Image 1 (spheres, rainbow, N blue to C red):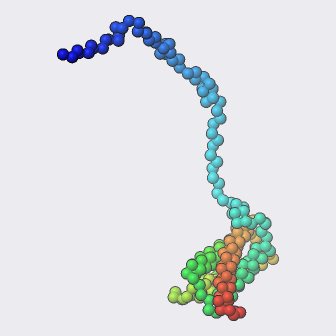
Image 2 (image 1 turned 90 degrees about the vertical axis):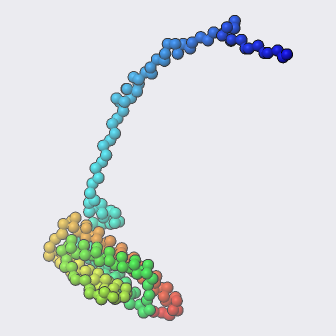
Image 3 (image 1 turned 180 degrees about the vertical axis):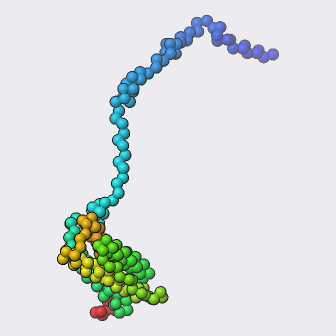
Length: 217
């Protein structure tokens, strides 16, 4: 008959077992951290600077944004209007090019640019007290080129009125406040940018057309 194994002896009753001494930190407890340095930092820390209140755009801010650095005079405004009118003349000439065809993307761009130019010219005329002529009547079903010629004509008419008013101002017939002159300068500059873009776009189209046809237009 096999011998049964003896059960293991109780280790707690074993002699010579080492005693576990309690940790002094556990026995006495951890001392709380010194918060005096943090309190001193909090009291000495500078308060956050107040957020600056946004200010409204002034005419000078608009002039800087538009890249205008010169102080406007009646003569400089007159020259601006004359330059814009010359560029519009180039646009009109290109629009009358035989066999000219525009892509839809080009048509959309010209419509936007010439429309923006007329809006800026109207704003300039209003600010200087110039007459605002009625827009050219164009048939609703007119083709894009015909509509663009009408928009160019509208711009030319506005610039004619602007030049007449500025000429009168130059000769002492009325005055404009400096801020109004600055706003007129800005609007004329913005109109000129839109007109120049239109001129460059049409120049490229006409140049490509000349290359395709192989003839001098």
